[in-house]
Image (cartoon, rainbow, N blue to C red; front, top):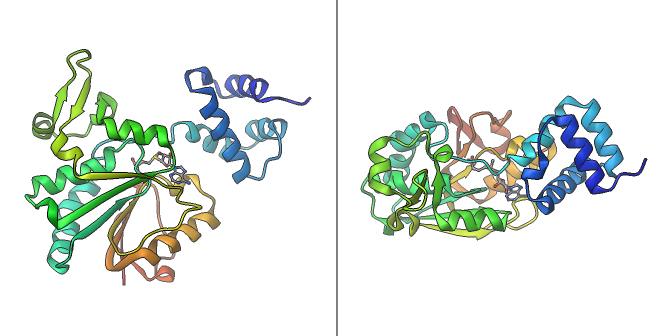
Length: 262
Ligand SMILES: C[S@@+](CC[C@H](N)C(=O)[O-])C[C@H]1O[C@@H](n2cnc3c(N)ncnc32)[C@H](O)[C@@H]1O
């Protein structure tokens, strides 16, 4: 049997019990092929066999389609720690403008959360910059529009909702983020695996991205991020992500999800 993409997609949809037609086909194809490259899979037949036989691959494949999911204050405890400890420390220890990078940023919830926190802390925007980057131009467009559904807003405290979000007239389940917050984040298209990084970051968030990568790539990328982090700067991972040997990268784990460069 030699499957083309449509045949593969139909078989995969049955196997996974998901309706892949709900996704943009071009995007599903692109995502499938990028995952095939990552796992050294040559054709759709082989990919389907792996989906049938390899539980881990099946999970990775499914995740690949929800890879853009993000939300404001994702893992609220980590963002509380950021607000209470990490950000005050950075502003106290460095006199220069604090450079923050959300990589990857998906639909913008993460960098906008940082902008909301800093605004709530009363820190003037001349004291920091927030860069947010992602590989996917479509999701960056969503980020720049700043309109969010209730799924992305589950963890937003009600006083923050009232202050910075306005329900749309035409759809009350969608909310426009305030231009004050949106103006504090700059977006950029960037492939974290293949593109070069600029340096001098005080805080890098790379959350819910390493989970999609092989061990080898994760190690390479950790080094790539550490190389551009300032000494005493912080690296902030997602709740299910860990660096197994932080000392190897000159990192010290200071708190759940937070690593400081020596
Ligand atoms: C699950 S989201 C993470 C968003 C956010 N950091 C969070 O934790 O909520 C993963 C993002 O990684 C992006 N991505 C995947 N491969 C990438 C790459 N090579 N370079 C940059 N971004 C990539 C996807 O487009 C997606 O938006």
